[in-house]
Image (tube, rainbow, N blue to C red; front, side):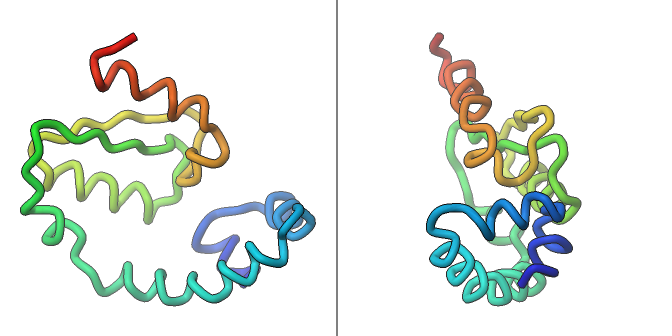
Length: 117
């Protein structure tokens, strides 16, 4: 599992160690261990662009951390090219986990998208 956290998600050794020692780490690590292999297999067998093609909403915002791993960038760009009304908002210095690691950046991206201040 530690290898998967590094190779698939892109966590470095310090981030993995912090995850191990975090409060409730046992619960988090057990969940990640149980779900990550299934999710990784699913990503290799699913055509996300095909699944996204029927999405027909006025405008969709896709968030992408500028430092996201290649697999996350590929998925996001595939969705961007498939969902005709989508917009991409890059979150500088973030990875795929921006909702957890930089929630204020995610929050700051919402008002301009919705046309509010």
